[in-house]
Figure 1: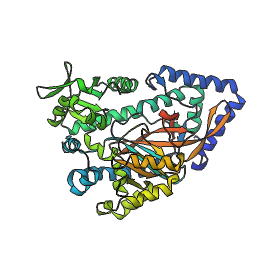
Figure 2 (figure 1 turned 180 degrees about the horizontal axis):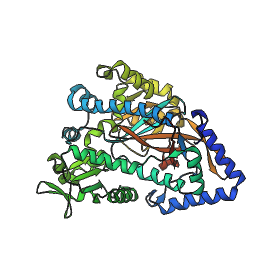
Figure 3 (figure 1 turned 45 degrees about the horizontal axis):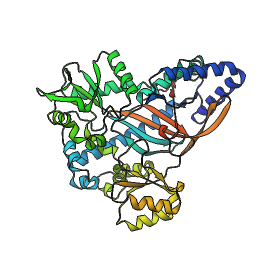
Figure 4 (figure 1 turned 60 degrees about the vertical axis):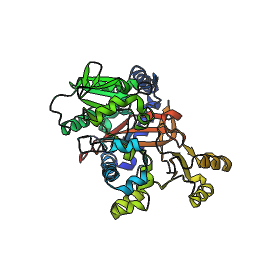
Length: 450
């Protein structure tokens, strides 16, 4: 029977165990760490052919933590699903989001399966006890599943990783098969009676090709013919979607909605095929209801009280930061932003990779005022800062560093399936700004994962 540590001591004990190995068996530790990074170098955990920064120290969660996070994230997902339905049916909610006409038209197309937000990664901050706050919902072109699974496998395939796996009764959350299962569930509801041919679709000049190839290989290993195709190369003929001479039944859409709208004239055959239900697309454009950061302005507004229960509003108040649009006529809020700039950030409602994000505490008053004034009335939002938690990690031989941590849960069809964990020395935790992606493992306890 493996030793089960209490939650508050689990990661501390794990850290101390790694340090003990590093100090008592420095050659063994170095050899295993080198094997980990060598494995990553040969793997598909790359962006633009560069290996994603990492550390030889996974983040681990207990079963009870997993189950607690599961309950919170699945509750949040149900609220976002409800928001997506309201966006389709309620004029006041539609006016609140004020999406462009092209997007409104796409939202109204029935994808022929019941779930509006099938694939998502919530960017979150978990303090290791009872605090969980969300800052973004990645529900459109959600990425990273292969990268985090690859890092976990590289860690566990070392002798030291295998030792820690047994001692702490650890398990990996397999995301690639879970992703495939969510695609197939949608296809089954779509009325797909045949075994589908799958296309992973994006603008290839903006795609993470290494990840697409890894997912393609994982899907094909499970027996599903899968190709990677530029969305602009897809054709609509004989009431079906085609990539060259191959008919496509099921599209895993990685082309984000903002890119599609920006290049709308280039993807008209794809759009026409979608309007005619010529194929099953996961996710549908309805996922934009949660992907747009405007959803935070809605869920934390007085308007939301008309549509959600008291319990739901209390949940949102506990787990979401206050968020408002930057509007030129909201002078009271402008005054608050200037007087309390150290507790706010501003960012566009629809971007990725922390593009266009500014923190008031990093700006002079003059810089902050200029940022606010230049971004009013263009769907920029202002959001209260979340206190970023910190934990200790071994980042080099024998060296312990306290790092800021972002724990991002993946939910497929509304069920928690795994995590994408990044660490950094700065509050904006992203690999594009020097952050590192690390493996995430869950300790299996006798009471089990729900």
